[in-house]
Image 1 (cartoon, rainbow, N blue to C red):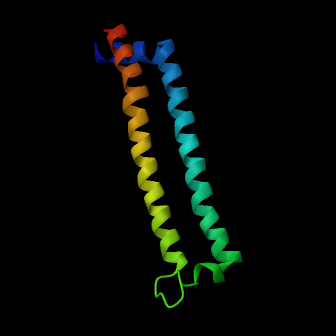
Image 2: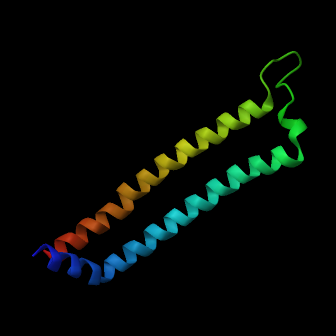
Length: 102
């Protein structure tokens, strides 16, 4: 019985659409995070002096620390956005597929 439902889900046309949507979403978030992260790494490699500068005259906090925190914050925002998109866009499609095959 369970194997039959799995086969019907895999054959459902909306399931193929769901797989494609999830793949596009993952790819978009991967590219966005790669740009942010590798942008930081390239900045470190070729313009490291900029990240070592103090935020303002006499400050002990450097620009690099602030940029690193912003990168971490962007990762958290992207996780939240992915969860939101998954819950609002992908999960209803999966629920409809499951209703169709049962």
